[in-house]
Length: 100
Image (cartoon, rainbow, N blue to C red; front, side, top):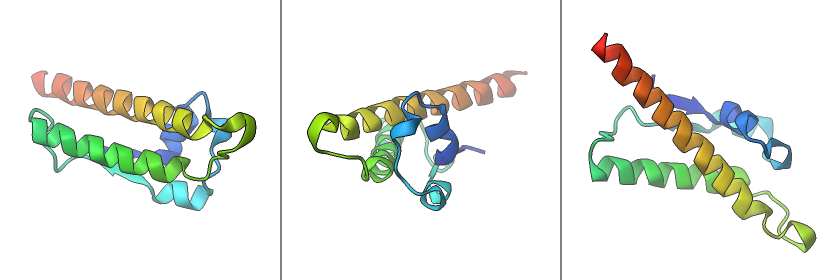
């Protein structure tokens, strides 16, 4: 249940048009955190590593010369923000479901 498919995450970004990753690659990228305890610093750190790894892979094919020099960093920061928000929303939803 605690999994985000990157194709959906990329589509949610305002900069989705700059992504150059092939669709097959994007479909294979998944962020899973069901095995992590996000209430601990260790779990949060591992989730951060997973997000960093995936954002680096997803944004690796960006043009890094000329007027698009900052495209890679913007891609990474936008994708990281989107994924972090999606994880938080799913975790909030799970906590609310447990209370009811």
